[in-house]
Length: 154
Image 1 (cartoon, rainbow, N blue to C red):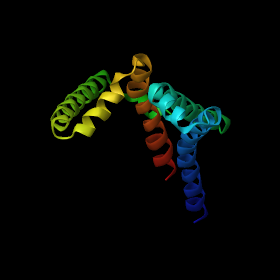
Image 2 (tube, rainbow, N blue to C red):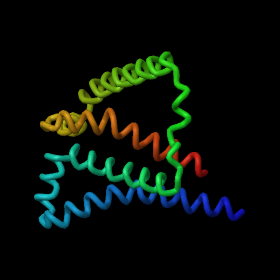
Image 3 (cartoon, one colour):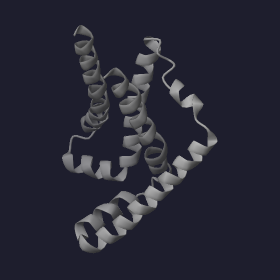
Image 4 (cartoon, rainbow, N blue to C red):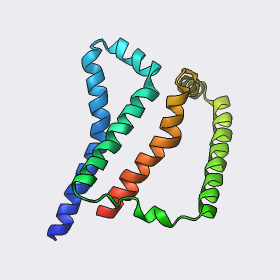
C-alpha cells in the first residue's frame, strides 16, 4: 500500500514538473513583458523558440533527477530496436503526417477561423526552431515523460 502511494506521489511530481516547466518559462516571460498585448505579440512571433525552451528545461530537469537517483539507464529498452522497425515507424509517421495534411486541407475549406489559426502557426520565420520542436523534442519529451517515467512508475 505504501509503495502505491509513493508511486502516485512521484507520478504527481512528474506531471507537475511537465506542466510546471511550461508555467516557469511563460511566467518568466510575463515578468519581463508586463503589458499583456506585448506578451501575446511576442509569444506569437517566437512561440517555437519559447516551446523549445520549455521542452529543453523539462527534459533537463528529468535527466538531472534520473542521474541524481542513478537511473541513467532510462533508454535501455530501446537498444534492441532493429533497423526494420525504425524504417517501419518512419513510414508510419510520414503516413500519419500525410493523413493529417489531407484532413487539414478539408477542414480549411469549412472553417475560416481554423484556416487563419493554421496559417498563423506556419507563417513565422522560425523554421529551424519549429522543426526542432515538432520533429525532435516534442516526441522525445512525450515518450520520455509519459512512456518512460509515468508508465514505469504507475
